[in-house]
Image (cartoon, rainbow, N blue to C red; front, side, top):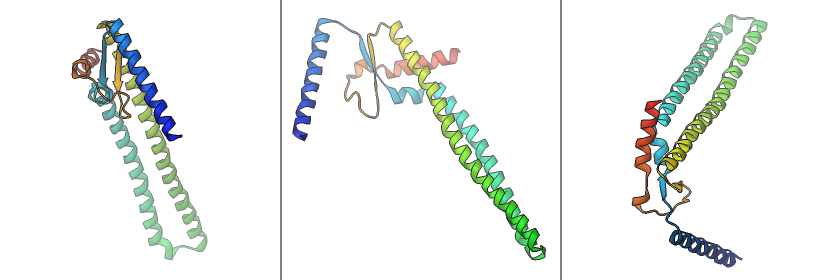
Length: 179
């Protein structure tokens, strides 16, 4: 079974290569590739998004730290006062401390979820900007196809002559600065 899958995979690979070679010989298409991750992380818009996200995260963390310190002070105050309190007062204060601790946990969970959501939203926006720019760049410069490398290896090899990553980085940042 495993051998059959390997044979089928190799057959498909060879067939695709043959088709690509035939197409290449019959047409003179302008094709390039870009190192996608390099482009995204060198994009000024991405760098600004990361700084904005870090600032927001610091604010959330500072708020959480404040809530934690308030809770710790309340616990310390309760421990100092516990001997002087009646059973009913101790129970009331313990319930308040329990509620305060739950609020700290809820806030921590909330900012973790909000952080993930905001990061995905910002990254999605940046990726849309990059993809839109690559499309405009491709049309403007007469490309028939621009491929992107990924960490999963969609492009295993490409001649450096058709790697337009650096050109795109320069152009997208010029375009971004002009907005």
